Image (cartoon, rainbow, N blue to C red; front, side):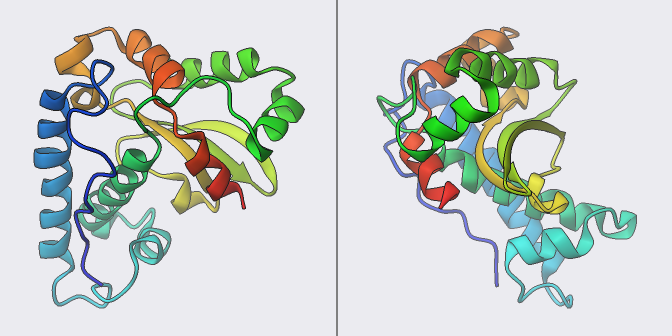
Amino acid sequence: MALVLPDLPYAKDALAPVISANTLEFHYGKHHRAYVDNGNKLLAGTELENLAPEEIIRKIAGDAAKAGIFNNVAQAWNHSFYWKCMKPGGGGKPSGAVADRIMAAWGSYEKFVEELKNAGATQFGSGWAWLVLDGGALKITKTANADTPVAHGQKPLLTIDVWEHAYYLDYQNRRPDYLAAFIEKLVNWDFVNENLK
């Protein structure tokens, strides 16, 4: 199963001014495309090429000899997931099952937001902040570089990309401002609720 660059679920200018069309042009059109193209080149002719990306990630996580394949496949998967975590006019307090689960786990939406922002802000270098389902419990976690909860038996519910290419054109070095704007104005809680099912 070849890696695919999915269509964005919205127009490239639909997330502005939080994330500009210019950022999406580079992030989706160049970075994500490169992970897909490089991943497909590395997978061609291997025993992995017909597996789903999630299977590849689980099978080769931690295998130093296959780090190049892992990095490109995981980044392609992470980005495909990330685009769905946002929507125009999103963000703010969730509703539905995830709202109840957040209250149960953190006691308040505000405490959840504080911890999610902290995960993104304290991820040293490049990586991701995540809301995951881990053994039935909601958890906030972070991963470095291409790493993904898929490799650790966790179910991703929401992610925020904190690689510089996700925000630098719009926010320069102000990662906390990007995190706050993402949570307040972009989170697609409908998608998160779907993942929780």
